[in-house]
Length: 112
Image 1 (cartoon, one colour):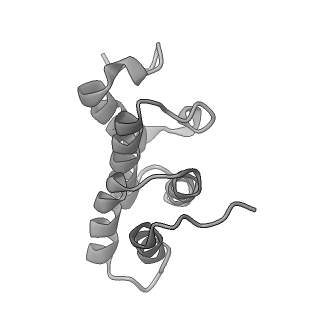
Image 2: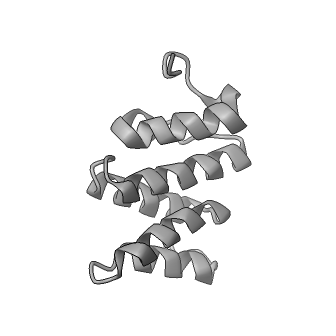
């Protein structure tokens, strides 16, 4: 079992995103702030949210945008998770990576 990160803010953001009673606006704000945190456990939690949201909701799109920002900042992508991305979430990731770190976009995944 992977331990939670020491980043208290990251843990709080994920708690908001996983709280079904949290106001939608709070969840959307939290999703936008994910980009400024990182860690293996943290990314796994974002993957879980994206899957739960079926990669299509506005929340999923904002989480995907933040995930792409993390990947661009860290100059890497998660090779295991990237192939799962599809729909609006994939478009968000490709847009962010295309603008900030085009070398990270896998061949064949560039929108044309």
